[in-house]
Image 1: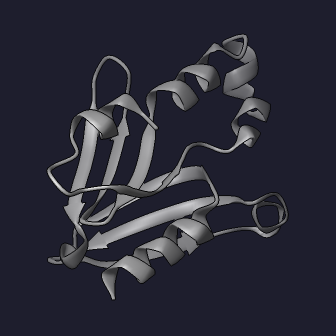
Image 2 (image 1 turned 90 degrees about the vertical axis):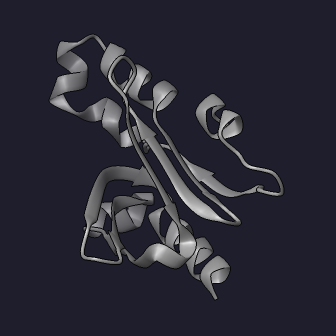
Length: 123
């Protein structure tokens, strides 16, 4: 489990599901140009978690972008997967909050399980 998620759990909150970027990010041209340093840093620094109270997503190493949204404030978690994504188990998740705010995260491992866990906890 990531350190950001661990450090920001509130009393009585537990992590129900956690994921990271899929290994396919190592096959991108940006990875090759950076001698595979970029995907290693992405997988090491970015965290995607669902707790029993909220969704917590942290991206960035030096400059940080966080999304912490209570489960009752999330309208839906959409998953987009192409053919290769369905075969290999990665995709894009789009988190839509009440009021129409939308956050998109690409190349996430196990996106369907992420959505499934959200649905289980929000019921």
